[in-house]
Image (tube, rainbow, N blue to C red; front, side, top):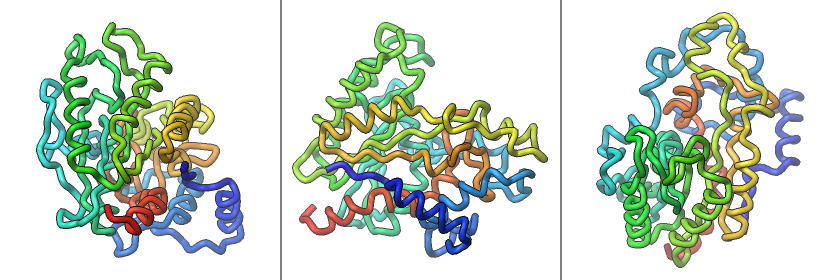
Length: 325
C-alpha cells in the first residue's frame, strides 16, 4: 500500500496553525537537541525562510565549507564511497550497529546526501542502517555511461548485481532507494529516456523485493537556479536573491513517474519538496545552509531533517516492529 508523506489537509492545518501562532516555535538547532525537529517545526521554518534577509553569521555549515559538507564525503570517511572502477564496498553499517532491525539506504550521491539524517534517525530508533552508495551510478537497472571517465560504465552494472545480492542476503525490513535522475546518460552516451529510467527503476524494485521487505522510492530535492553557497556568498545582505520559485525548482514530472512506479510495485513513494519549499525554495532555512552545491544538500540540513525523515517512514517502521523481521 502506498503511503503519502503528508496529506493536503495536514499541510493546510499546519499552515493555519502557523498563521494563528499556535505551533511551537522551532529552533534552528533542534536537530542537535535530545528531541529532533518535528515535521511541523521543519515546515514552520521553511515557511518563514522567505523572510530571511541577511545570511546569518552562524550559518551551518559555513559557506566556504559547504562543498565538502555533504554525504559523499561523510561516507568516504568510512570507506563507503567506492571509486568508479570498484563495484563492491565494506560493511558500511551506520545507525545502531547492535540493532535487531535493518534498513538499507541505496543509490547514488543523492542517497549519500541524506546519510546524516538517516544515520541520526537509525541511532534514535535503534536500527542498523546499511549504506550502499556509488556516485554516478543510480540504483536503476539499466546500463549507464560515466562522464568522468568518458566511456560506458560496466562497473555500474556490476555494482547493481552486487547490491541486489547483498540486499537479498541482508533481508532487511526496509529498503530506501534514492537517485539523481537528471543528467544521467545511457550506455550510448545519450541522455537516458524517461522510459528507460522507469523500466530500470521497476526492475530494481522487483529484484530487491524480499519476503516482508518494504520498499521506498525517496523523491529528489528541488533545485535552485543558482548553487546555494555561491549565491549566498555573493548576496550576504540579500539572501532572497538566491530563492527560486517552486514551479521552477521542483522536478515534478520525474516525481510523478516515481510515484507511479512505486504504486505499481506496492512500494512507498516519499516526496521531499515540502521540506525545502513553500511556493518559493530558499537557500537558507533557519540558520542552515541547505545546499552544499548546485545539486546536493548539506550534512547539517540532512541531520536537521532526521525527525521529518522518521515521520515519513514511521508507518513502515511500525509495521516492521509488529512483524518478525
